[in-house]
Image (cartoon, rainbow over all chains, first blue to last red; front, top):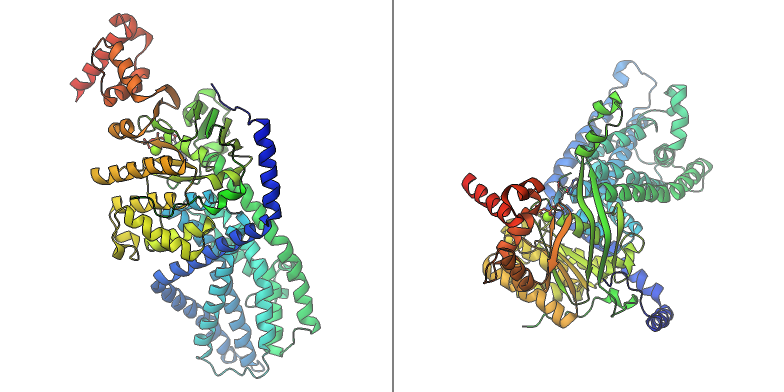
Length: 304
Length: 320
Ligand SMILES: Nc1ncnc2c1ncn2[C@@H]1O[C@H](COP(=O)(O)OP(=O)(O)OP(=O)(O)O)[C@@H](O)[C@H]1O
Ligand SMILES: [Mg+2]
């Protein structure tokens, strides 16, 4: 049998020459164009999916608005509980920021994990994993849509919920708010990618498991309360969660009008930069390991 | 009609391919699937019972050797669960072999995964699409992953889908409304679109009507003749295997039991049975996939392997 016959030496030399010439012609450039196209492919596909499932978007928005309202009404009723000196406007805003970060995190997280779930369900995952693209392009391409989608969704929710109250936003610094959300998004992407390993490995309940990750992340980050009210053992966890810093920065910007260059915002920014720089490569690395495991055990197939 | 504009995909320009080397080399490839044990029994920690362990494992592909030359069309035939799809998945970088090696034009499917992915494409038996999206949206997504520009891709998608008999008004309507056969054609278009030099077809024509089957067969032949593609195909349609394949390999329980061109196999089985006329491909299939059912004991009881086989077939017919 001719199995495994080695290529002739002359051919090898020619191949080398060809390779070199191609390199000169800007191999890097064409690789970049390819990865950019692929990354756009994910954006476009996800946008098409959102359009086709628009009714689901509305249902989801109603659900999130209802949740956010029930929490902000809690703030509005604080005075009737005897909290005389309470600044209700501030409390409502404080809670509103919590609900917004909650939705933002949900929508972006889901943008990543849901796609894996959906691709599994449709069976397209084998085709996506077979395509000649790097996993970085695949995951980050899915994420930048998730971020755009999450920002828009959260903004809509904020408009609807805000319209229920007469809020004084005179002090708010919107520049800081957007800045914090964008910086925080990088870390959320990293965590989202790591969480999307769950639907990859656990065919049946993987996406539900990612809800738990998200809920725990927010629990330790002080979504609706100051982290100092948590038991001592939980507080170090808050330092590790990017949501803690996003919430602190956002509140400083919206409640107190802190500009981007103020110390309190900077103190929330640099940890986010560090967590972001670590979590994205780590998330992709974890995904890579899970992918190898799935390819070894045959878990990419639709039916177990 | 020629395949419109099916120039080699832009991806291939940057890969050095030795045109004289074999397209696919599978050497001792093996894949075992382990059924995961329920959590409770894992906690009980009973010692690794070898017999238990073997029952739980499925030996899907068992030391397969196969070499496919460039421009060859090779068919893999075998009963349900014999390991055909598993083999194809190993070739398409979706499963990592436990043992042995698999390479495409000298590039290893595990070590040179990224390069292999540029050379291949695959059609699976399930169409696998985002069902709410249209064929155009689905294929555009696929095309961009293979480095095609939007305008170029749109043109080629329309041309290929039309060629496969999809009506223009269907191209932009959700895929979920299409029949299974039509969806399968879109799946075939997705693979042809990227003009792979190695095409892996896993029951591509299952569910297609006879005319569409022939259309696809023409298309496959054309890919080979005009674009020098190498094709590995699995099918349960013996006429198709006969018409399309230069060579077939019949696998049974994860092992290749016989391989060769269809005419030779048909004559060989006829000779074994002492017939003067060649038998049909169906008979060839029946013959080689029943082999494992016949034991040494049967051979002794009936005098020869052939007699044992006949007895087995007779018994089977009675049961039906
Ligand atoms: N991902 C997987 N996980 C566990 N077992 C698997 C997996 N894929 C295949 N198997 C098992 O491996 C064996 C071979 O399956 P395979 O799908 O390769 O068969 P096939 O020849 O393609 O069959 P068919 O003609 O029905 O398509 C079967 O016993 C199957 O149950
Ligand atoms: Mg199969």
